[in-house]
Structures are given as C-alpha cells and as structure tokens.
Image 1 (cartoon, rainbow, N blue to C red):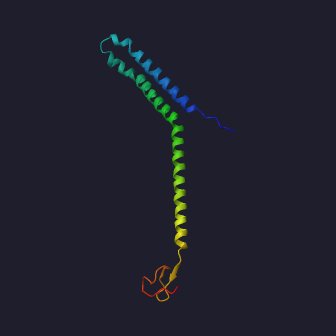
Image 2 (tube, rainbow, N blue to C red):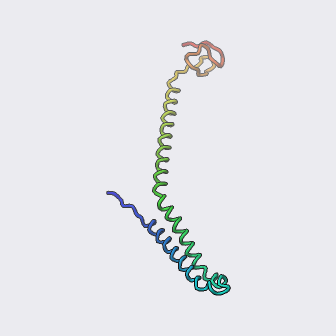
Image 3 (cartoon, rainbow, N blue to C red):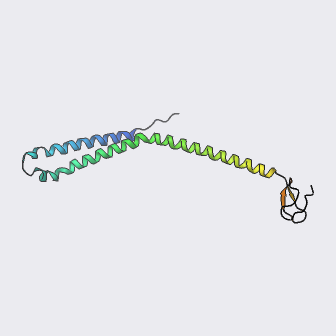
Length: 134
C-alpha cells in the first residue's frame, strides 16, 4: 500500500507568503492618504508595524516554501550517501577479513631454542640465528 505524500507544509508556507503580501500591500495603502500632508512619514511610522509584519511573513513564507520543496531532494541525496558509505565500509570489512585469513594461512615455525615464531621460508631464526629444523 502506497502512502500519500502530505503537501500541508508547502500549502501553509504559500498561504503565509500570500498573507504577508496582503499585509504589506494593506500597510502601504494605509500610509498613502497621509502622504499629502507635511510630516506624513513621522505620523505613518507608527502604522509601519503592519508593513513590517507583512514583510516578515513574506520572508518566512519564502523560506519555508524553499525548505519544504527541497526536503525530499535532501532526503534522497542523504540516503544515497548513506547507502554508498555502507557499501564502502562493507567492502573494507571484506578486504580486512581476506587479509586476516591470508595472514593466518601463513605457516610459522617456532624456534626450538628461543621460542620465537617465524616464517617457514627462513633458514635461520631471526632472533637467535638457530637453523630452521623443518
């Protein structure tokens, strides 16, 4: 059974952006009638909170839209990276096991004089110099 993707985050972020645009425009229109009078900027600065809040909502809407749209791509990229790294780690583990088996398969001889273990192909013990008694 396939699960349906939820687009509620994208919808909420787009609605936030639209509300932000509406508040920005309404905040600007509130200031327009006062522009004809002298000192309109000082009077309307107290009404600028609506414009600033609208701008803030627009920015939040854009950021959340970008995050919600890029989240599935980031998830796919991260899962691919994790998959590749696990493959690399498994290959390294396999190589280490093979090397360990090769190392263990090499037969070593124990010196009858000093007890040092050394490779069969050597003629003398590397520690004491006693001859190899194959």
